[in-house]
Every structure is written in structure tokens, then in C-alpha cells.
Image (cartoon, one colour):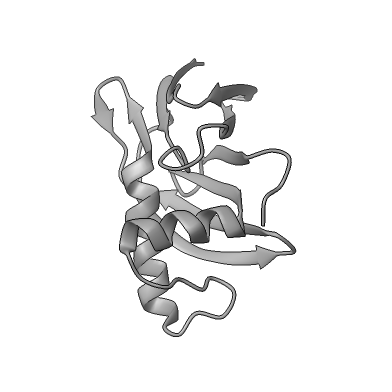
Length: 147
């Protein structure tokens, strides 16, 4: 189903107790399903998945190929923990491996750019007691946050 705008929101914060970056990404479910169907070349049903583990693995591959975090030139690996559905949206939950709190965080975000040239990706980052946000319009994919 078409809608008037194409938007994702990525929220990222540092958990000093766990020493991990924790994040969520919110996307329109139908947009993500459409992209996955085209890329995987098979039916995808995020609302009623046949195999939840296979769906989680597919979402993880998609997310890691299109959303990357770096401090300086060092990639900060992360794992997809799970997802929830909320009305017409899907929430993806992830966390990094243990790391020091970044002073400079580079985010490369090209979620849904494959097939939606109108896509807008918003990043909200909370680090070192500060909150910063940025909006990327397709094809822009990189933003650097300094704290």
C-alpha cells in the first residue's frame, strides 16, 4: 500500500552499564516487506512469518548491509535482537558488542534506498549526555556525529 511519505527512524544510545550501543529502527512494514521480497526473490510475510528464525536472519542480513556504525575507521559490530510489529510499522532492536562510548560516531544508513528514491532516514543519537539528530534524504547515506 502506498503512503504519502517514506521514512525510517533510527534511535541509538550508549548504555554505560552494559558498555554497548543500543538501538531501534522503525520502518513501514509494507516497505520493508517489498524490499525484502525483491532482494530475496521469494515471498516475505513479516506479520505472519512461517519461520521466525529465518525471518530474523533475513532481517539481520538486510540491516547489517544497509546500516553501519563506526568510530573513526573502526566498524562497531552489532546484532539484531528481535522485532515487533506496531500497526503499520515494524521495530527492529539491536545492540553492539561491548565497546567504549564513541566520541565520534559515523553512521551509514541506506535503509530502503534500493527501491524507494523518496526515502528519508532520520537518526537520533544520545551519547555523552547529549542528544543529536540528522535527516538523510536518498541517496545521502552518511552522517558524522561528534560528542
